[in-house]
Length: 419
Ligand SMILES: [Zn+2]
Ligand SMILES: [Zn+2]
Image 1 (cartoon, rainbow, N blue to C red):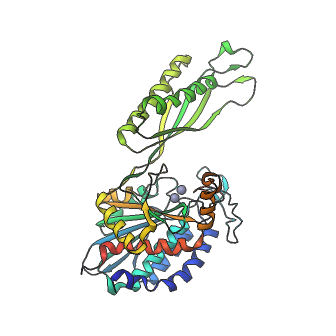
Image 2: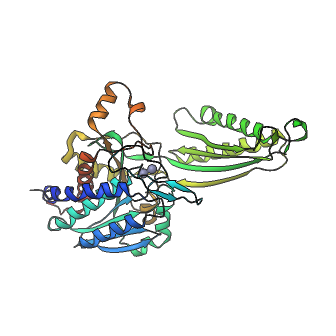
């Protein structure tokens, strides 16, 4: 029997505790940077499996290392944080949790992005690889990362001397549950997830009585002009063959109908797959904002600051081929090519810290019957909740089993002894 089959043979025992763990993690989600309970659970299980465990890297980050003789080092990452979303799934294990967000506000908390699935997958893979250690050689590094949703968790681990505290991997791997038929595995070489840049903008006018607009400079009219003009960047400045999204997600000004306020604040989000396109879009945004302020007679330069930046995810061609072939040998037609995803991930900060190649791929988590009937009715967008939706509810199986197996198969593509 091949090493992969030998290692996967013990999966039934792993599945039993994984389902309980998953429901428990789902019912007890924790916000970004507050993943204390989840981190403790991960560390305890890793110790039980014989991993060397380091806790508290970059806040709540946990890394387990399983040294198993000479051979390559493979790192696999799972993120642990949940979102300020009120769960509406109606599941028996739905979250009732609340937390305090970074602005000090009490918010509902939900695993609406499936990071509970990711933790469960990776712990399951750790158990299978630990129990099947006779069938592979090398070092397996399981990394549990805080604060993916705020975009700073991976960087926080890197800044906390991750590369000194953890063996340098030859390859880094990660996988994300997404709305697609459960059991499907989607990989893609090259740019796979978008770079994301958020921009905070304050434009200044001059406050006045609403009945006497000629005494002021209206920042609401100015902000409205900016919002309109920004739409022309993607429509008129980016090549129709290139990809970019510019969204104004927040606009705030004023307190009362008859007061012209002194300023307006906007928050923008930009998505791109190419650094040159990104630079061009960011420059166009700044040019338009400054020019509209001048056109309005603002009299004061706007403040424009970047925040919540998430890097481009660019899968290595060689790693994509090796892992996709290994997955296809086990899962056959269930392995397909992913489309580029407009969402972003901070995963690549981890491999980039060492300068090592990586693959980040996707696993479908939607109940196959629900998926098939939505496809049949042409209602995918309406009926299938996406990540971050209050209705996001991955079906437990086959999602947990497939993701756990995929994690093992991908690692063994590098760790299994030749011949
Ligand atoms: Zn998310
Ligand atoms: Zn996520």
